[in-house]
Amino acid sequence: MSAMHNPTMPAHVPAMALELRDVRKSFGKSEIIRGANLGIAKGERCAVIGPNGAGKSTLFNLISGRFPLSSGEIRLNGGVISGKKPYQINRLGLSRSFQISNLFVNLSVYENLRCAVLWSLGYKYSFWHQLGKLRDAHERAEQVLEQIGLQRQRHVPAGVLTYAEQRALEIGITIAGGADVILLDEPTAGMSRSESDAAVELIRKVTVGKTLLMVEHDMGVVFGLADKIAVLVYGEVIACDTPQRIRGNAEVQSAYLGTEQETEYA
Ligand SMILES: Nc1ncnc2c1ncn2[C@@H]1O[C@H](COP(=O)(O)OP(=O)(O)OP(=O)(O)O)[C@@H](O)[C@H]1O
Image (cartoon, rainbow, N blue to C red; front, side, top):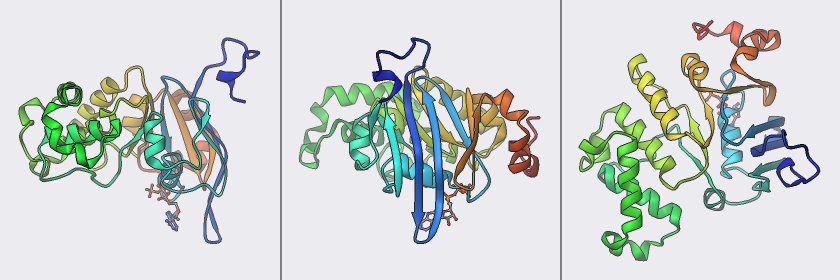
């Protein structure tokens, strides 16, 4: 039983938004995730870092239900989600972005957001002709439009936006359904320093009161945004701690940080 459901647990034990317990994933004979354990408290912002090929994207695909686990368990807000379909996990309150663009390029910014809201509300395609009447979806899309600062581009097809604007729209789509656990996969990849600074501010703003798990290679972003950093090496979480403690962790230094170019934060 998880901490949040156990009345005998002391009050200081934080309620977990997301828990991975001995999660394993093999592709054929290769075990890629090798007994990963991770706990993210409600309201925490956690960054997963690790060398290329460590299994970060695979871990995201397991959490969001895209891949089935080989063994282990994943819990969202105390309830088991491993074994469920991605749309079921989404409706239980977890939403993820993709490294590869997930936008409808011919639809406007506003329409992309409205589709995301409707999808997470569970509307079927047959209802789409009634879109104009769906005031709740309209209001939510307007709210997100404002949050991501793309009001002026509301009628612009998503495919015409700048790269940084497209990434902001993807973040908007990810949060549009009101999920309380947000997974972002390399949200600042390919951005200039100033674009990525703006993205950090946006992510900070839209995740207030939510739980964030992100995969990120840019150490400036990681150390600027994360309350906690999980280090994944060869499919295992070798450390999960505050940025300050991770920075001073000798095992992390030798396994990852010390060998990377991206150590400018030090
Ligand atoms: N569907 C799949 N079938 C077989 N092998 C896979 C599959 N998906 C990922 N892998 C393998 O799993 C390993 C981990 O890949 P993954 O993309 O999860 O790493 P990563 O830490 O996200 O890497 P990067 O930082 O480069 O994005 C790699 O060796 C990859 O080839």
